[in-house]
Image (cartoon, rainbow, N blue to C red; front, side, top):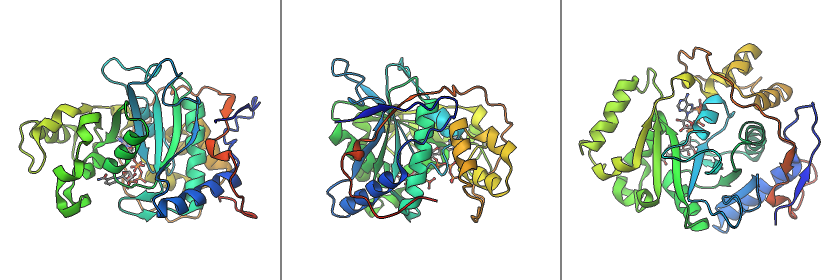
Length: 327
Ligand SMILES: Nc1ncnc2c1ncn2[C@@H]1O[C@H](COP(=O)(O)OP(=O)(O)OP(=O)(O)O)[C@@H](O)[C@H]1O
Ligand SMILES: NC(=O)c1ccc[n+]([C@@H]2O[C@H](COP(=O)(O)O)[C@@H](O)[C@H]2O)c1
């Protein structure tokens, strides 16, 4: 059962109230359990005990899931997490922030990195998603179809919506990530219970908005080989010009250069404080992956204070290591 506590954070604006040692022990244990297949998905924290249902009497029909590496979480991630479609609202449909312990292209992440990313996700969740039922979870699966399946097994009656930026949407449909390069077999019944919102991410690498839109139109006409045109009915398109150019790479570079002004433009407040206070990315090699013309025109993102911080489920009784802190 989820235990909760009220943490009086007052004006200190310290959001990372999860105990780092416990969190890191929990991730270690999860990684071990994942190796044997005992555990492949685990809730870390949530705004309510009955997640994704706001209460036992009001079952949720649709869950919005933002999968990301969150290194660090930024304003574009927040914008994606807050997208709602077809009459859904932040109030009536919950949000799951999902972190994979293994990445599709980069392999397994070390525990210390996962721990700090989870702490930043918690800062984002509690300070910027207080107007929606929200949770954070980890999965050992790197691929969307597996993540979706394990969430479906956990909550069989809940439909899933996956907001995905265009670069990652292209990778979702790339046959190289599927056994025998067979996209249709790889997807299985994913599109019977899932929808995807592809968000434009214009830039040198992936073309401009028009090219990205025409990619989707080609799917609709059945002109993308290996992609059934019926899938297009489950794929929507969203243009979010105000997040153009934002990326974790750009933030790591700004942190590396000590550019707090730039960090302030790209990061929600709680995450900004975490990055600055912990000196993250200072000594790292920040090889650029995506830099573009973000115009800094983001509006308010609801930096609300949240004083009710749930203690994570996994704080039940983890075995603690002697000392282990994330950087
Ligand atoms: N500015 C953006 N516009 C649209 N989608 C975005 C944007 N930034 C991130 N996303 C999407 O958010 C999801 C998580 O992405 P990810 O964690 O790789 O962030 P990132 O900023 O691309 O990180 P990195 O720079 O380290 O590659 C992906 O679906 C990605 O396409
Ligand atoms: N085909 C797929 O399901 C697929 C391909 C590439 C990345 N991903 C995932 O997308 C997320 C973002 O990846 P990057 O951090 O590499 O941009 C990660 O969780 C990664 O594992 C999934």
